[in-house]
Every structure is written in C-alpha cells, then in structure tokens.
Length: 517
Image (tube, rainbow, N blue to C red; front, side, top):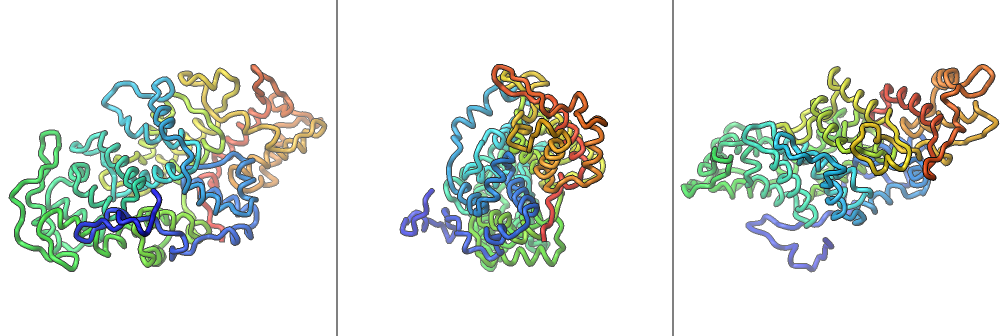
C-alpha cells in the first residue's frame, strides 16, 4: 500500500490507537545501518560473510554467479532493500503450487500440522526476495517468539490457530496496519486466549511478554479488567460476558476499566514498544550480553518504530548485526539459504520431513507456548539431528535428468541441481587435472563457507581424487559429461562435489554467522 501523507486514512484512530502506520524510511533508523560504501571497502571474503548473513537471515540465497554479480555491483545492500519494496512473486501461483497434492504432501490426516507444512513450503515456492517474501518472513519470526507463538502443543490450541495467527500478521503487514493495532487485534482474539486461558494468566502474560512488567501488584488489576473474559471448554472458544468490570484500575499511567481498554492502553504505552523491541533484540543478538542488548534496544526505541518492519529491518541491515554479531544459524536460516543457492529440487515429502526434523532438533515451528526460547539447536542431541538433516538431505543429494524435474514421489529425485558444478563455476582445463580440481574445490569452499581450503584440506582432496600419475581417479573425472535428452549431467563432478560438501557439512563455519570486525 502506498503511503500518502495527505490521505486521511492514516489518521484513523480510536482513543489514540492508530489503525494504519506507514513503514519509516531507513534514514530514520537510529541503529546505524551498514552502507554500500562501507560494504564495498571490505575484503571479498568479508563481503561474502556479510552477504550470507543478510540473505540467510532473510531465509534466502543466490547461486554463485548471481551472488558474485550482486556483491561486486557496488550497490548490494541497496539492491536488497529495493527488492524488499517490490512485488515480484505471483502469490496466486505460489498458493496454487504449495496446495498441489502431486508435488507437496497434503494427505487428509488431522493428526499432522499441515498449516506448518504450507508455511515452510511457501518460502521455497517464492522465487524472488520481495515484499511478499519479507512479510511472510516477518510473520514467521514473530510466530517463533513468545509474542505470537500459536502454541499448538497445548490441548486448548489447535493446528488452524497456526494459520490464523500467521496469516493475520501477513495481511496486516500487507495493509500497513501498525504493530500496535495488529497486536491489539491478536490480544483480543481466541488464538491468544487459547494460549493464556484465564483473566489472571492472560493479564499477567500480556504485561510480562509485551511490556516486561513483572510487578505482581499489576496482575490483579489486569485480571479485574478481564473478569468477564473466559475460554469456554466447548471448542475452546473465547467468550466475553456482559458482567464487565466497572471499577477503574490504575495501569499504564492512566485508568482502564474493561478488557478492551486494558489491551488498548497496553499497546499504546511506551512499555509496549520497548518490550517488543527487546524481545526481538534477544532473538537476533543471542551472543550479546545484557548491557549491549539494552544499548541496541534503546537505539531502536529512540527511532520511534510503529511497524514490525521498522524494527526487524533496522536490526538485520545494521552494522551492529552484520559486522559485529556472531551466532549459530537457526535451522531455517541454513536450510533456506542452502536450497536457494544450490537450486535445490524438493520432493513431495520435503517440508513434512523438514518439519519433523525441526521437531527432532527441539526447534518445532510455532509449537511452544513460550516460543523458541533458544532459536538454535545446540545441545548435543539436537545438533546431531541438525547436522544429520543438512548433510544427508541437502548436501549429499543431487538430481540430474529431465524426468527428475517432473517427478516428486520418488526418494531419489530430489537434491541440488547440475548447475552447481557447471562450467561457469570454476576454471576447467582438460590438460590440467590438478589445477582444475584445485579451482573446483576452492570454488565450493568459498561459496559455502566464505574461505579457501587450507593447504592440508586441499592436499587431502587432491590425494583422494588424483592418481600418482596426475590423472583423475576413475570416479572423479571432472571432464566427464553426459547428456540426457539435452540436459548435461556431470557425474565425476557430482562425486567430487559430494565429497567436498560432506566435509564442509562438518565445519563450524557452515553453521555460524561470523563476526567480521
């Protein structure tokens, strides 16, 4: 939606709570943003690290030739910002694709969270990084946190709550609804009351979650305003009775009497902005200590954000995040960045199994009552599942041939596509196997972990892939190319790439966003 300062629609409000709020210009951000000028002054390896951190954070990635062109264009960061303001994805086609039962697993079974599968598949089906992608990404981030988790692990919550909470966030963003009013709608919804089910519980949690108010003396006041709100056990339905409170309660520097007034004044308060920003700072800056988290929070709050984009893009494009922070990638960040840049072909059960893998990692999407308290699977067992899934399902799988492009049922018709090892990715010399292999291995290392292989790593691969006479071992002939119905298949390169990617799957750099300065 285009913002016009003279449009009276943007002045619509009720008791001081505005419905519509435009996204601010990045020039209004107080958290210093990384500029293209500073980005262009970085060494190439650091540019790759920064580009990977930004794109993977947004659940995106580019094939190597595209990434190189964007990094060396001189306006990488501006181009990403520009893309996020455009509408390139045809969302009608995207929705038709992810509901195609021949390509995406949707068997009729009420015991599985198909709502989650659809959301996970949608990021894969959206081909472009654009405004639609951004709004879905922001909704996904918010529903992983304590603020908006649908919490389908609870008996009182249900799988459709996933779609309800998530879809309303996306639609509010599409319509320029401000973060205060959008949250007010959520607070007054059945979805919220299915998670926190009594006046005392709901009042306490709204105060603690959104304003970081842990003062026990405020809880009875909140509960009093909500005395006529309850979750009926019949279908877990929110009911608001007529026996509403009539005694004003002192909260948020004013007085509130009814539940609607409680929620309205809560989101209007300064505490709502500072509390919500701090929740997101905690989510992204997991390596920062308390003092630095509060410093970043205060800077963002001082810019007076009124939309979720004002907060989230201010974080992910900042110098603070792109240059100075270091943390493990979430499973979603690594998964989507890999499938995008490896031009990965899915099969029918890919997102069903990805959801199951997140369960195994204790990183289930939108499941937990309090959201993902730890957003990366770093205990021993959880990380073992993380590594196993990335290695076996993404890095060690490849496809070739036209029939694989139209088949989604077979277990052997998914994986990265042949362009990953195409002629445009490295220097090939038919008379120099050693030099060709070195170029090939270096390309994969720099693309995947943003550094060349060490001399020891290179020697290990060369010793394994070359004979003593300097020729290729029989299964690693990088010059062998076969054509299946006009489509190139590089069997020697695929074998070599699998070995290199298998090794890279064991490197910490693959799983980390690295500090640059």
